[in-house]
Image 1: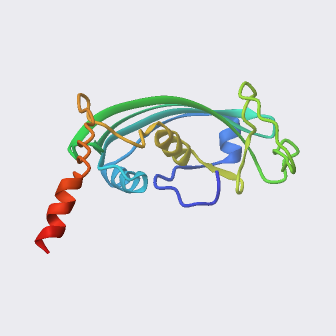
Image 2: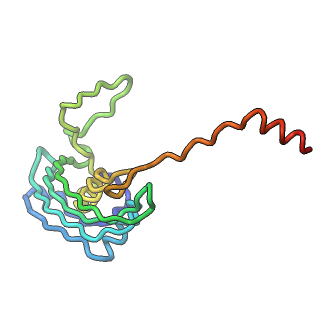
Image 3: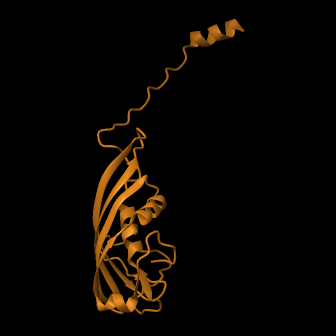
Length: 173
């Protein structure tokens, strides 16, 4: 993860993560408020995650599963509505200076949608597990939330003015 401040920090040292651990994270009310503000959603009523940390090359692998209950504002009716979300993620990360770090490519880049993602480059000798959970929650948010059952109805186009209406308006002047 980059050096940006996380709305839900849960920092683990790289050495501890490499030894392996399973974390069960539950966001308290204060953390949920900060996360909701950071993600621009109305409220975050619940957020839990189970993340397994294990050694991967000279870095760490994270395998996580998360669940959230959120309230968003419908983009059509402007009514708040609740949504339950869940997801899984697998991320690999390496420390700075690692020979396994992704190399910066110049020129044309080939994209292979079937290839594994390159590992993340950590900013230091620790990783923020909470930031990874929030990042994957953010990826699941609908950018145009719509309350179930609400349909957008386009307003009727105004009829073009009749040439006779235009002439009548000129005659009045």
